[in-house]
Image 1 (spheres, rainbow, N blue to C red):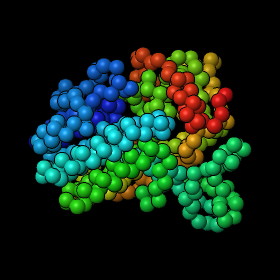
Image 2 (image 1 turned 30 degrees about the vertical axis):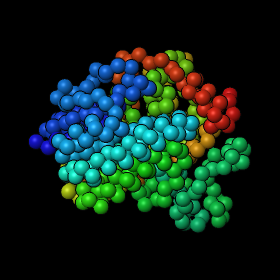
Image 3 (image 1 turned 135 degrees about the horizontal axis):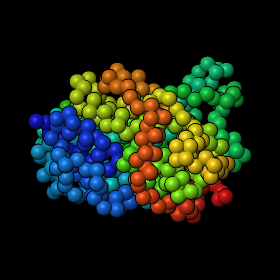
Length: 375
């Protein structure tokens, strides 16, 4: 039986990957440190058919022992949170970049024989998504918007040649990467190191560039997690979701069960290699997300989103996935519609305790100068 080692396998995404692998007949060992920001205790959703080891990916002795018996490495462990990464710089680099470097150092110098490696990468490494200037009929990859533009509430990008407003388009893997946060830089580090070592030592390696993941088991009390979880926590506590800019910025939301299926496809495909987008290709605005969550929680008469007309340093305007490479190399198409996926999140969320910690997290960003104005 093929033995898969999954780092970060007790977390939101990792635990769904564990279930997917177990159901497909793989032997699974999980390494997780149950970080306090995500877990208040050992989760109740852990798959009893997997082996769990509680420890840190940076523990060289432990990782040597675990890697020695693995056939496949699925590296999901990571410190997450874009805003938080901008003032906990050493921690993010230590966990994400140096932690991954240590794993690879063990694999190379202890001559670990792996059949395949998969690493969780992120759409954040792109920075802004891809755009088209309809007037010039050309693709554009604009840089991050500057403060002088943002402070005048000019949220959209314009062509640097003709001045026309750019239209967002699906972002392909070939787009130049322009990471705008420490988190994104460390995810790029993880991806590049894993792919580099995979090429050099002839280990088939796939970096899955996740777009915005949502679904059950997401840590609702973690104010640095995804927007669906943050909004859910606000709404459950009868607080309005705070939407930055004008709320029309677009993201690509993919259900966690589809991400788990993509991970299984990555280890089973004979042709999968390199970086592959994992999204839906169908973007939603942040306001749409807030409105749908308010409706499904049954609070349309009590709550409506607060449009801040504020902005956070490093935020991008639009980004959604071109999934043609996933379709070709992984035979992957998302199966869960946004409507069905959000409904699943809300049904699960109704049963969860969720302290709303958004105000504290937002105050930290303001204090660090990462939010332009406070309303």
